[in-house]
Length: 287
Ligand SMILES: Nc1ncnc2c1ncn2[C@@H]1O[C@H](COP(=O)(O)OP(=O)(O)O)[C@@H](O)[C@H]1O
Ligand SMILES: [Mg+2]
Image 1 (cartoon, protein in one colour):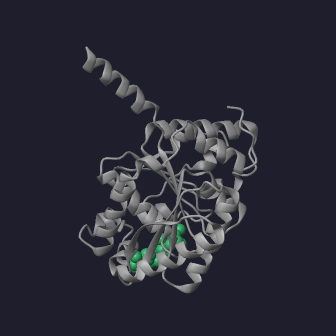
Image 2 (spheres, rainbow, N blue to C red):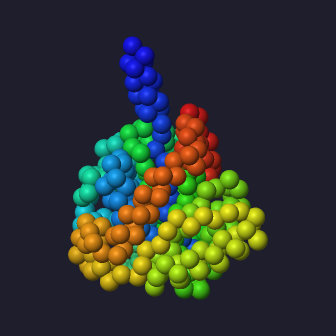
Image 3 (cartoon, rainbow, N blue to C red):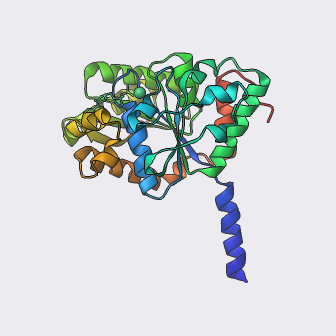
Protein backbone atom coordinates (compact mmCIF):
# COMPACT_ATOMS: atom_id res chain seq x y z
CA UNK A 1 0.00 0.00 0.00
CA UNK A 2 2.74 2.38 1.00
CA UNK A 3 4.54 1.64 -2.26
CA UNK A 4 1.40 2.27 -4.24
CA UNK A 5 0.80 5.60 -2.55
CA UNK A 6 4.40 6.58 -3.14
CA UNK A 7 4.08 5.61 -6.79
CA UNK A 8 0.99 7.76 -7.15
CA UNK A 9 2.68 10.71 -5.45
CA UNK A 10 5.66 10.35 -7.76
CA UNK A 11 3.39 10.27 -10.78
CA UNK A 12 1.57 13.40 -9.68
CA UNK A 13 4.85 15.14 -8.91
CA UNK A 14 6.27 14.10 -12.26
CA UNK A 15 3.27 15.41 -14.16
CA UNK A 16 3.34 18.68 -12.31
CA UNK A 17 6.91 19.32 -13.26
CA UNK A 18 7.34 21.70 -16.15
CA UNK A 19 9.91 21.51 -18.87
CA UNK A 20 13.11 23.46 -18.38
CA UNK A 21 12.96 26.29 -20.88
CA UNK A 22 16.44 27.05 -22.20
CA UNK A 23 17.17 29.87 -24.63
CA UNK A 24 20.31 29.60 -26.76
CA UNK A 25 21.63 33.06 -27.53
CA UNK A 26 24.71 35.06 -28.50
CA UNK A 27 25.89 38.61 -29.01
CA UNK A 28 26.65 38.20 -32.69
CA UNK A 29 25.43 35.88 -35.42
CA UNK A 30 27.29 33.02 -37.04
CA UNK A 31 28.81 31.70 -33.79
CA UNK A 32 26.94 28.38 -33.87
CA UNK A 33 23.68 28.97 -32.01
CA UNK A 34 21.52 26.99 -34.40
CA UNK A 35 23.97 24.10 -34.57
CA UNK A 36 24.22 24.11 -30.77
CA UNK A 37 20.42 24.23 -30.33
CA UNK A 38 19.74 21.42 -32.78
CA UNK A 39 22.51 19.07 -31.71
CA UNK A 40 22.05 19.72 -27.99
CA UNK A 41 18.35 18.89 -28.43
CA UNK A 42 19.31 15.63 -30.16
CA UNK A 43 21.86 14.75 -27.47
CA UNK A 44 19.26 15.39 -24.74
CA UNK A 45 16.79 13.21 -26.63
CA UNK A 46 19.39 10.42 -26.80
CA UNK A 47 19.55 10.64 -22.99
CA UNK A 48 15.85 9.82 -22.88
CA UNK A 49 14.55 13.36 -22.44
CA UNK A 50 11.47 14.68 -24.23
CA UNK A 51 12.66 17.71 -26.18
CA UNK A 52 10.80 20.40 -28.07
CA UNK A 53 12.92 22.77 -30.15
CA UNK A 54 11.47 26.19 -30.89
CA UNK A 55 12.94 28.10 -33.82
CA UNK A 56 12.72 31.70 -32.68
CA UNK A 57 15.13 33.13 -35.20
CA UNK A 58 13.39 35.75 -37.30
CA UNK A 59 12.88 35.24 -40.97
CA UNK A 60 15.15 32.43 -41.99
CA UNK A 61 14.00 28.91 -41.17
CA UNK A 62 17.46 27.92 -39.97
CA UNK A 63 16.59 24.91 -37.88
CA UNK A 64 14.54 23.34 -40.64
CA UNK A 65 17.31 23.80 -43.18
CA UNK A 66 19.80 22.23 -40.79
CA UNK A 67 17.51 19.24 -40.21
CA UNK A 68 16.42 18.76 -43.80
CA UNK A 69 12.80 19.63 -43.00
CA UNK A 70 10.32 21.89 -44.66
CA UNK A 71 6.93 22.49 -43.11
CA UNK A 72 3.91 24.39 -44.22
CA UNK A 73 2.63 25.60 -40.86
CA UNK A 74 4.53 27.55 -38.21
CA UNK A 75 3.97 29.93 -35.36
CA UNK A 76 2.39 32.41 -37.76
CA UNK A 77 -0.40 29.89 -38.36
CA UNK A 78 -1.06 30.00 -34.60
CA UNK A 79 -1.11 33.79 -34.54
CA UNK A 80 -3.56 33.78 -37.44
CA UNK A 81 -5.81 31.34 -35.59
CA UNK A 82 -5.48 28.60 -38.19
CA UNK A 83 -3.76 26.14 -35.88
CA UNK A 84 -3.07 25.33 -32.22
CA UNK A 85 0.56 25.31 -31.10
CA UNK A 86 0.44 21.51 -30.75
CA UNK A 87 -0.77 21.24 -34.35
CA UNK A 88 2.30 22.99 -35.74
CA UNK A 89 4.66 20.62 -33.89
CA UNK A 90 6.77 18.70 -36.38
CA UNK A 91 8.35 15.33 -35.70
CA UNK A 92 12.04 15.82 -36.44
CA UNK A 93 14.84 13.25 -36.83
CA UNK A 94 16.38 11.94 -33.62
CA UNK A 95 13.11 11.84 -31.70
CA UNK A 96 12.73 15.54 -31.05
CA UNK A 97 9.82 17.79 -31.97
CA UNK A 98 10.14 21.15 -33.64
CA UNK A 99 8.04 24.30 -33.69
CA UNK A 100 8.97 26.19 -36.85
CA UNK A 101 9.06 29.90 -36.09
CA UNK A 102 9.50 31.71 -39.36
CA UNK A 103 7.97 35.13 -39.81
CA UNK A 104 5.56 34.50 -36.94
CA UNK A 105 8.28 35.66 -34.58
CA UNK A 106 8.26 39.20 -35.95
CA UNK A 107 4.64 39.52 -34.83
CA UNK A 108 5.13 38.22 -31.29
CA UNK A 109 5.34 41.72 -29.81
CA UNK A 110 2.07 42.85 -31.38
CA UNK A 111 -0.54 40.20 -30.70
CA UNK A 112 -4.30 40.41 -30.38
CA UNK A 113 -5.60 39.15 -27.00
CA UNK A 114 -6.90 36.00 -28.75
CA UNK A 115 -3.58 35.28 -30.43
CA UNK A 116 -1.75 35.91 -27.15
CA UNK A 117 -3.96 33.41 -25.33
CA UNK A 118 -3.49 30.84 -28.08
CA UNK A 119 0.31 31.17 -27.89
CA UNK A 120 0.50 31.17 -24.08
CA UNK A 121 -1.95 28.28 -23.66
CA UNK A 122 -0.21 26.35 -26.38
CA UNK A 123 3.22 26.82 -24.82
CA UNK A 124 1.84 25.85 -21.40
CA UNK A 125 0.53 22.64 -22.90
CA UNK A 126 3.91 21.87 -24.45
CA UNK A 127 5.69 22.66 -21.20
CA UNK A 128 3.67 19.98 -19.48
CA UNK A 129 4.44 17.46 -22.24
CA UNK A 130 8.21 17.80 -22.40
CA UNK A 131 11.34 17.81 -20.27
CA UNK A 132 13.19 20.50 -22.20
CA UNK A 133 12.09 23.32 -24.47
CA UNK A 134 15.16 24.57 -26.31
CA UNK A 135 14.78 27.95 -28.01
CA UNK A 136 17.07 28.93 -30.85
CA UNK A 137 17.03 32.73 -30.71
CA UNK A 138 18.45 35.32 -33.04
CA UNK A 139 21.60 37.24 -32.27
CA UNK A 140 21.75 40.79 -31.00
CA UNK A 141 20.49 42.82 -28.10
CA UNK A 142 17.27 44.12 -29.70
CA UNK A 143 13.95 43.68 -27.86
CA UNK A 144 12.71 40.76 -29.93
CA UNK A 145 16.04 38.99 -29.76
CA UNK A 146 16.36 39.13 -25.98
CA UNK A 147 12.74 38.52 -24.98
CA UNK A 148 13.20 34.75 -24.92
CA UNK A 149 16.55 34.94 -23.18
CA UNK A 150 15.07 37.14 -20.46
CA UNK A 151 12.03 34.93 -19.98
CA UNK A 152 13.69 31.50 -20.15
CA UNK A 153 14.57 29.50 -17.04
CA UNK A 154 18.15 29.25 -18.23
CA UNK A 155 20.22 30.84 -20.96
CA UNK A 156 23.00 29.23 -22.94
CA UNK A 157 25.27 32.00 -24.16
CA UNK A 158 27.38 30.94 -27.16
CA UNK A 159 30.67 32.64 -27.92
CA UNK A 160 33.64 31.73 -30.09
CA UNK A 161 37.22 32.53 -29.00
CA UNK A 162 37.31 35.53 -31.35
CA UNK A 163 37.65 38.86 -29.51
CA UNK A 164 34.66 40.39 -31.34
CA UNK A 165 32.48 37.45 -30.31
CA UNK A 166 33.60 37.73 -26.68
CA UNK A 167 32.88 41.47 -26.60
CA UNK A 168 29.41 40.94 -28.08
CA UNK A 169 28.74 38.04 -25.70
CA UNK A 170 29.53 40.37 -22.81
CA UNK A 171 27.11 43.00 -24.18
CA UNK A 172 24.43 40.31 -24.35
CA UNK A 173 25.19 39.17 -20.81
CA UNK A 174 24.83 42.74 -19.57
CA UNK A 175 21.49 43.18 -21.36
CA UNK A 176 20.14 39.94 -19.90
CA UNK A 177 21.20 40.73 -16.32
CA UNK A 178 19.91 44.30 -16.58
CA UNK A 179 16.45 42.94 -17.38
CA UNK A 180 16.55 39.92 -15.10
CA UNK A 181 19.11 40.03 -12.32
CA UNK A 182 18.27 36.44 -11.35
CA UNK A 183 18.93 35.05 -14.83
CA UNK A 184 20.86 31.79 -14.95
CA UNK A 185 23.37 32.07 -17.77
CA UNK A 186 25.70 29.27 -18.86
CA UNK A 187 28.53 29.75 -21.31
CA UNK A 188 29.28 27.47 -24.26
CA UNK A 189 32.46 28.20 -26.19
CA UNK A 190 32.09 27.06 -29.78
CA UNK A 191 34.74 26.62 -32.47
CA UNK A 192 37.49 26.35 -29.87
CA UNK A 193 40.90 25.04 -30.95
CA UNK A 194 41.02 22.95 -27.77
CA UNK A 195 39.79 22.81 -24.20
CA UNK A 196 42.49 25.16 -22.91
CA UNK A 197 41.46 27.88 -25.35
CA UNK A 198 37.78 27.44 -24.39
CA UNK A 199 38.71 27.60 -20.71
CA UNK A 200 40.59 30.84 -21.31
CA UNK A 201 37.49 32.39 -22.92
CA UNK A 202 35.38 31.23 -19.98
CA UNK A 203 37.84 32.67 -17.46
CA UNK A 204 37.84 36.02 -19.26
CA UNK A 205 34.05 36.29 -19.57
CA UNK A 206 33.28 35.07 -16.07
CA UNK A 207 35.91 37.50 -14.74
CA UNK A 208 34.31 40.58 -16.33
CA UNK A 209 30.87 39.29 -15.37
CA UNK A 210 31.89 39.10 -11.71
CA UNK A 211 33.79 42.38 -11.78
CA UNK A 212 31.39 44.62 -13.68
CA UNK A 213 28.00 42.91 -13.39
CA UNK A 214 28.50 41.21 -10.02
CA UNK A 215 27.11 37.99 -11.42
CA UNK A 216 28.56 34.51 -11.84
CA UNK A 217 28.75 33.05 -15.30
CA UNK A 218 29.12 29.29 -15.27
CA UNK A 219 31.02 27.40 -17.94
CA UNK A 220 28.81 24.62 -19.34
CA UNK A 221 31.29 23.31 -21.88
CA UNK A 222 32.84 23.73 -25.30
CA UNK A 223 32.54 22.47 -28.86
CA UNK A 224 35.76 22.24 -30.87
CA UNK A 225 36.15 23.67 -34.33
CA UNK A 226 35.44 20.51 -36.27
CA UNK A 227 35.06 20.10 -40.07
CA UNK A 228 32.28 17.55 -39.44
CA UNK A 229 30.04 20.44 -38.36
CA UNK A 230 30.08 22.22 -41.70
CA UNK A 231 29.97 18.90 -43.56
CA UNK A 232 26.80 18.04 -41.66
CA UNK A 233 25.36 21.49 -42.44
CA UNK A 234 26.01 20.88 -46.13
CA UNK A 235 24.12 17.58 -45.89
CA UNK A 236 21.18 19.04 -43.92
CA UNK A 237 21.80 16.34 -41.34
CA UNK A 238 22.78 17.42 -37.79
CA UNK A 239 26.33 16.37 -36.88
CA UNK A 240 25.21 14.33 -33.85
CA UNK A 241 23.29 12.07 -36.26
CA UNK A 242 25.61 12.25 -39.27
CA UNK A 243 28.89 11.84 -37.36
CA UNK A 244 28.26 10.05 -34.05
CA UNK A 245 32.00 9.74 -33.34
CA UNK A 246 33.09 13.25 -34.33
CA UNK A 247 34.86 15.37 -31.68
CA UNK A 248 32.00 17.93 -31.82
CA UNK A 249 29.49 15.15 -31.13
CA UNK A 250 31.45 13.87 -28.11
CA UNK A 251 31.60 17.38 -26.66
CA UNK A 252 27.92 18.17 -27.15
CA UNK A 253 27.02 14.84 -25.53
CA UNK A 254 29.07 15.87 -22.48
CA UNK A 255 27.36 19.22 -22.50
CA UNK A 256 23.92 17.57 -22.55
CA UNK A 257 24.87 15.24 -19.71
CA UNK A 258 26.08 18.24 -17.69
CA UNK A 259 22.82 20.05 -18.26
CA UNK A 260 20.76 17.05 -17.17
CA UNK A 261 22.77 16.79 -13.95
CA UNK A 262 22.09 20.42 -13.03
CA UNK A 263 18.42 19.82 -12.24
CA UNK A 264 18.14 21.81 -9.03
CA UNK A 265 19.06 25.13 -10.60
CA UNK A 266 15.93 25.55 -12.69
CA UNK A 267 12.98 27.33 -11.13
CA UNK A 268 10.10 24.89 -11.13
CA UNK A 269 7.15 27.04 -10.18
CA UNK A 270 4.36 26.72 -12.67
CA UNK A 271 3.99 29.24 -15.48
CA UNK A 272 7.15 31.07 -14.51
CA UNK A 273 8.45 31.12 -18.07
CA UNK A 274 5.10 32.08 -19.54
CA UNK A 275 4.53 34.90 -17.07
CA UNK A 276 7.96 36.34 -17.70
CA UNK A 277 7.56 35.88 -21.43
CA UNK A 278 4.25 37.74 -21.45
CA UNK A 279 5.71 40.52 -19.31
CA UNK A 280 8.77 40.80 -21.51
CA UNK A 281 6.65 41.25 -24.59
CA UNK A 282 4.53 43.78 -22.74
CA UNK A 283 1.41 41.66 -23.01
CA UNK A 284 -0.35 41.35 -19.68
CA UNK A 285 -1.21 37.76 -18.96
CA UNK A 286 -4.66 37.11 -17.54
CA UNK A 287 -3.98 33.46 -16.77
N1 LIG B 1 32.09 23.79 -34.01
C1 LIG B 1 32.15 24.17 -35.29
N2 LIG B 1 33.16 23.77 -36.09
C2 LIG B 1 33.23 24.17 -37.38
N3 LIG B 1 32.32 24.96 -37.96
C3 LIG B 1 31.29 25.39 -37.22
C4 LIG B 1 31.14 25.02 -35.86
N4 LIG B 1 30.00 25.59 -35.38
C5 LIG B 1 29.46 26.29 -36.41
N5 LIG B 1 30.23 26.18 -37.52
C6 LIG B 1 29.98 26.80 -38.83
O1 LIG B 1 29.40 28.07 -38.64
C7 LIG B 1 28.20 28.19 -39.39
C8 LIG B 1 27.18 29.02 -38.63
O2 LIG B 1 26.64 28.24 -37.57
P1 LIG B 1 25.15 28.50 -37.05
O3 LIG B 1 24.86 27.41 -36.06
O4 LIG B 1 24.21 28.64 -38.19
O5 LIG B 1 25.36 29.91 -36.31
P2 LIG B 1 24.28 30.95 -35.75
O6 LIG B 1 22.99 30.22 -35.55
O7 LIG B 1 24.87 31.45 -34.47
O8 LIG B 1 24.17 32.03 -36.77
C9 LIG B 1 27.76 26.76 -39.68
O9 LIG B 1 27.10 26.67 -40.91
C10 LIG B 1 29.04 25.98 -39.69
O10 LIG B 1 29.55 25.92 -41.00
MG1 LIG C 1 21.03 30.63 -36.26
